[in-house]
Image (cartoon, rainbow, N blue to C red; front, side):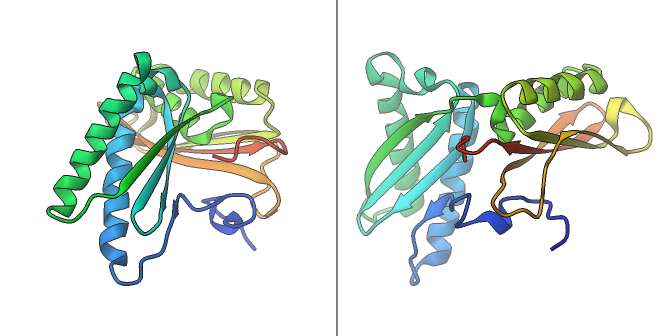
Length: 218
């Protein structure tokens, strides 16, 4: 089966589920672009809350948005004020994209991430922040891998590519601890990629985490 880069691809329907769950044959393109824009807007707006993923479920006249964050209190706000403001932002987004079309009935849910160190996206985001602050990359890789393994992971692999440390020539640096079986479908492998924009250019970050059985699948 070979070495798959994106571990979610061959595990859809068995370990992982689709991040958008709907099917609209007549306006598939428009709805797909709407999902993309909504997800991009939420990932930028809620970055301070430690957002990891956004799931979107649609039916005929309703829309359910499930937001997975590591700090749900920032999203909900005092007395639910943050959630109301978020709902207004999403409503304004749909009003802009749909124009005069009827807006769907929305249900926004905020799901906390129990262990952020087992979420590949949050780990990659954390590595990017440290690289932007110009910390030594070897220390970043070692400390991050130790935290992930300490959280109960069975294995972790982190790959950096680009002008690491401001080098003149781009290269690859990798750390691999434990087991990360890429072709074992029943293994719960979390995967994420994230760019870090440094003064010398972009550094690509890829993270694979082999989670224990029953671990967070987001």
